[in-house]
Image 1 (cartoon, rainbow, N blue to C red):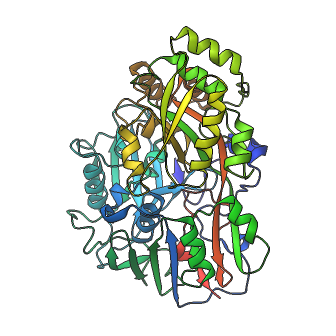
Image 2 (image 1 turned 135 degrees about the horizontal axis):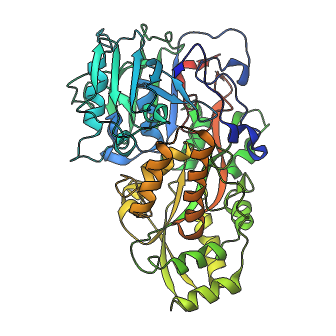
Length: 520
C-alpha cells in the first residue's frame, strides 16, 4: 500500500551507495526545494524564465506520450502530470494519485486520485486515466511507456468512482507504483488527440504557443493542485549546440541552460557570472552493441569489447573526471544494483584471445556518435584508440544531432548512448525485454523476459532482489550495454534564478521542476 501520509521505505541500495552520497534524499515530491537551492528569502512571483535545451528538430511534438528527449520531458512535466513520479531516491512518489493499495495476491490495485483540474477547468477523473493508459498501450503505436504499462489488463481495469480506479493486472506485480511513475505515462483528458495546437493538461503551466525545433511558451496555471508556479511564464528555447546554450546564458538571452560540458562548468564555477549546478552521477554513459547482428551477435565479441574499455580513461577524458566508472550495469547505487560483481578492468590480451576465438581478428566496426550529448564525441575518439591496441579498427561516424536518437535505436551496430536516472526495473522494462519500445541493444530473450515477470511477481523483497541479481549477472556476462561511467548532470543558471533543486538526478520529479523556480 502507498498512502502519501505514510511514505514508503526509502530504497535501501540507494542509501547504502557511498559513491552516490552527494545525491542526498531531500523532500522528494514535496516541492520544498528551497533548502537545496540558493536561498534568497521568500520566493517572488512574476517574470518569464527562458530555458535552453537541446531539441529534436522540426519533428518535435508536445504529445507527452511521445516524450523521449530531455526537452520533451521537461515540456511534458510543465503541461501534464502523472499518477506518480520518481523521487530523488528513485522511489515512486504520489502525484495525481494520493494512494495505492493492492490485494493480497498483488494482481489488483486500487488507486485514488486527488482533486485536480485540467487547464480548461474539467476535473481529472478515472476515465481520463484509463483513456491515457489505453492510448499509450495501443498495439499499433510505439509510445514510450507502453512496455512499462504491459502488466495492466486495461480491458478489465475500470473506474470504481470519479476519482478511483481498480487496476486489474495480468500477473502479480509487487512494484506496480513504478508503473504509475513510468516515463511517458502522463494523464491527458479523455479523447484528447490534438497535442501540438492546443494541448490541455493538469500540470503547473498552460499552453501559449509552440514552434517545433525552436520554442514553446507556457503560462502559469493559477489553479494547479499543488499551488500556482512563481513564474508568470516559462519559455523553452531550442539550442542544440552546447556553446549556443552557454553563450545565450552568458549573454542574458536565457536564464537556464540544460546539460553543460564538464570543461564549461570548470571554466565558470565560482566565477560569479553564472551559477553551476551539478546533479551528481545521474547520467549513465555507455556504448551500445546491437546483439542481433554481426559482429555483436557473437557474445565473445561483446565480451572482448567489455575488456577493451579503459573506463577510468573514458571518465577522465570524455567527462573531464566529472563522474565515476561503470561496470556494464545500469543504476549504480539504486535499489537492486548488484555491486558484488568484480569491477571490470582493461585486459587487451584476453580481448584479443576472445576475438580470435570468434573469428573476428582484424575486426572493423563503425561507431555512431554525435555532438548531441556531452562527452559523446570525446568518448568515441578515446574508445577508438583503446580498440586499436586490441587490433580492432573503429570508424567513428558523426551523426545528426536532430535525428541521432531516432536513428540509433534501429540502425548501425555500435553507438554512443546515455540515460538519465530511472529504477533498474524501468530500465529493464523499457530497454531489455523482447517487446521494449526503446530496445537499443536488440536484447531479445524469452527466458530473460520470464525472469523479469518473476521478479515483478515476487512479494518478498530479498527474493525479488535475488532474481534481479540473476538478470544482472547475465547482462554483465553477455549484455549489449558497455556501461563505462556515470556522469554528473550539469546545469547553468543566471544568478537571478532561485529554487533549482540540486539533489534530484536527471529524469526525477524535481529535475527541471520549473513550477518551483523563481527570479530574484
